[in-house]
Image 1 (cartoon, one colour):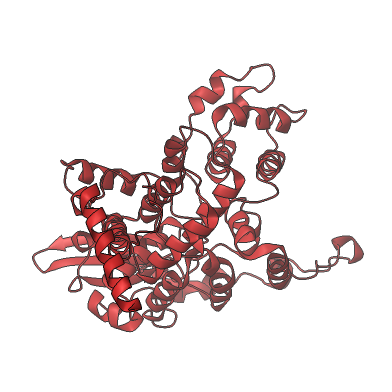
Image 2: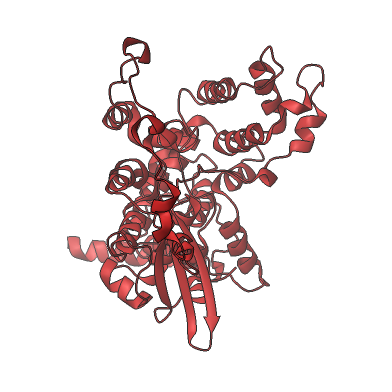
Length: 457
């Protein structure tokens, strides 16, 4: 997998384009609805790129990414990661061109969803609700809405039609138009400045096994014609949002079929949401990176050693899967899930680093995964700004080595032997101190007793 410096360099140039005019109202939507989901770096990147567009223009001048780094006070890795998030949430489309002059990027800003689209999205609104809570969500909903207009039945329509107001000129008075028909056409290599509406987030249909779904459906209960493209998009989104497999999805579809043999999309969404909240004690899913971001992956070559293979595995596997593997395939408890989520969101640890933390914590606490111990490691790693799997493994090795050295130098003859924890295979066991033999220990004991006796005298 490519590193960020293979994808982008400070000397690479870029220009900004807008897919239609961006309105001032979009700033409020981005600030209050998108920023809680994508973070301040993504928000700042979008706003900075937007600022490079002159008022009512669709294109910017060319700049370098070095300038962007100075404007944002961010390193290139953070900018690259923020760019990927903007792309994923539908706010940015990126194109690249390579020629003799070097590499140049085209960043096309896409408008955010309208408040109505966002609050009825069925995906982003769920993540926002989970992020900011019920009270703030309701407040934002009121902020972006107003009283409904009066019913049309209360007023009589007296609007005049075009032909009632205007008359067309006679042919003789139109002579001046002759010969200027070309001026009435859109010029080549030009486009009119307008507004392109944003499209909702769509999870790719290939992420859900529709073949398994249809194989388990009874045609008399759910006709295949009910699986319209729109319904399929909703199913793939719900499957991603709530981690629903085809067998479970079939039950929600059966409950959402109406008298016209059509699937009611709102009933389908409500059924999936109610099921998820019931299973997860009224909690809703949150939006987190599923695997280690590309910019933070270090094992880019084919892994050869066991440690390299482990690093690659942790960089490409979601923490939930790693946790289940250490638990023998058993699903994590709600407490464990909440702890995992908190260390990723509260301490902002990347998924790959969380995978290392899971292994260290599970092995050192007899597979208990206690919250207090996990958070103590997470807070320490967050302060140390651990971002990569390799760094996390090195830090864990060093901490274990220091702990053993401390035990070795501070050991008292009157203390009971300290139990030895299970350690991951990738710990450097050569650094572990050798056990002292019996005779040596007895000699040291006698030496200490002689010293204490001399002090008493």
